[in-house]
Image (tube, rainbow, N blue to C red; front, side, top):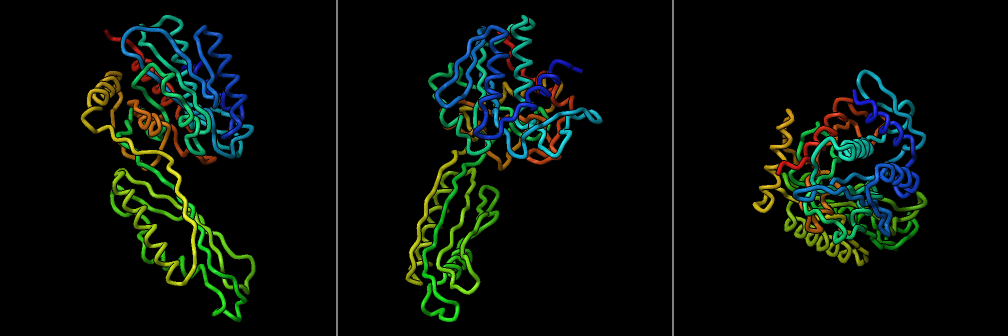
Length: 359
């Protein structure tokens, strides 16, 4: 059992760092990095970028410092071979297990245990709320053109080969309030929304695209025709062209439904990230090298195409080859979150292998 690795993990999960409140964990990590004598900088957004000299092709590792709620006063304990939360909180293994494994890898490198590639460490802020740290990162500061995030709740060794583009929308339907006893004087926004939902496909459209409205708000009293509704939704697709077609279709359906009842609407879109697909020819060498390194230490290099997104999407948007590798966590974002100690150790072992220079 790697006691130092486990202790590092337990130490950092104890530090509260819910999204937007990463200053304390950032200061702690900066102290750890300073102690081993490697250079680092903190960008304007608060991301940490550390650099370790080496030989060969440069590489980067990335993990995010923030966690979701309930993520305060976390205490990690060992139970039946797993690290779990002692209380009614998340564990914070997403993504602090990866941070701990990266720190342990830094220790191994600086202790002279391996001949390493030039390695850049990127610790980002506010991934959970929208990948904002990665979005704010100036890619010109990164020497490496390829690297890895470790942020997928699957068995270590699993390679996330693709991840969808993701756009969210806010729709406000502007009808007209009226007393419930005089409905003809109003314009019912709920009727309009029901027509939109009837005419626009929702759910799993096909193997590449899902569409959802997850939040609907409106009304204040029982006896009033509902004059205004606000709803929030999203489209995720591995196919950028398909996503754009669904956006246009949605806008047309909304326009038609509101005009039919002489209502109005406001519709806005926010692009969270583009899709990344590492099956394209230009990524072939990177993928195959990764696969060989995973299997060289006895792990199975499974391929995965989950619907979740990560900082890896943003790095690929910025022109870097970045694969999201599994971090071994289970039940992330819940109070049942856990990670098997052997998975944490395997993730560290894989990082060491990836960082080793073979030239």
